[in-house]
Amino acid sequence: MKHFTVSGAVAASPVRGPQTMREIDEDGMTEQGFKRFRRRRAPAAATPSSAGADAGRPLAAPVSVGSAQLPATLPEPWERIARVPFDGAAQERSRLPLVSRFRTAPAAKSFDLLRTRLLHTLKARGWKRVAVTAPASGCGTTFSAVNLALSLARVPGSRTVLMDMNFRRPGVAQAMGLQAPGDMSGLLSGAVRMEDHLLRPLPSLAVGLNVMAGQDAAEILHGRSCAEAVDDLMLRSGADTALFDLPPVLEHDDTAAFLPQVDGVLLISDGTSTTAAQLAACEKMLAGHTQLLGVVLNRARTSDSPLN
Ligand SMILES: Nc1ncnc2c1ncn2[C@@H]1O[C@H](COP(=O)(O)OP(=O)(O)OP(=O)(O)O)[C@@H](O)[C@H]1O
Ligand SMILES: [Mg+2]
Image (cartoon, rainbow, N blue to C red):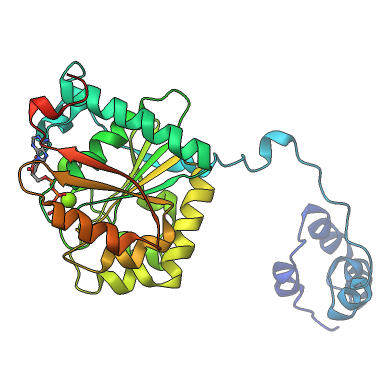
């Protein structure tokens, strides 16, 4: 009598179950019983040839899943921009006098007036992109850009973007009391997405911060990827107005490099230091490249204010 070691075969079987074990017990260890056992087990074991025969057949119908299991729709890019606190504490840290803290101050009224006039001009021409710059450093470009952006953001149902394009002396983060780092060159090279770079201190205001002072700023601002990134920003953010804080016109060629990306320029002059010759030089430089939307007189004497 032959002895078959079936226990090993059964143990290796992937479909081992109580019935199999019972059959082995009933048939004992006879050769006939073992052959019958193998015949019955054969269909259960998938072989490469049977798998090959099935290969051309249609797969089983897809299992229908309830709508609750489908991936949820992503919010639009604007909603995906991270919110950051912009409360009293953040404004307290701010280096600049923010007019949003002093709504009744004459400066706040001046920015609201500037906002309204700017919006009229932009709307009439279908424009959205505004460069904010000055003849020289320290005239108040960042002061004006931040306060104008805060004023624009108060227009109900609007979206405003403020971008710190000053790679020489980035100032928006400090001006607004925001401490998050900002990789502006990553955004402009296309490596970082708009919604991953921008921050929203207010529901209607997104800011692109810049902390890197770099020597190759003009090259970054000149590049094709910069133009594409700005187009993408405008398209995907759905911004009504975008302000770009840029370095002084007469000190670097960064602003000149970026002019093709904007519809017009707001020139900030310092009532205590800017000369007529500087303003004339700026106008000459901008002529033929973009529109001069206006010259803003900062640090004006009280008697210079149109509100008086
Ligand atoms: N109208 C103003 N009232 C009070 N302080 C002001 C005013 N304008 C500017 N400042 C102050 O002057 C300083 C320089 O202003 P700001 O940073 O806006 O200059 P900037 O033109 O952006 O300079 P840079 O070219 O170096 O970026 C800041 O400390 C700011 O608080
Ligand atoms: Mg500045």
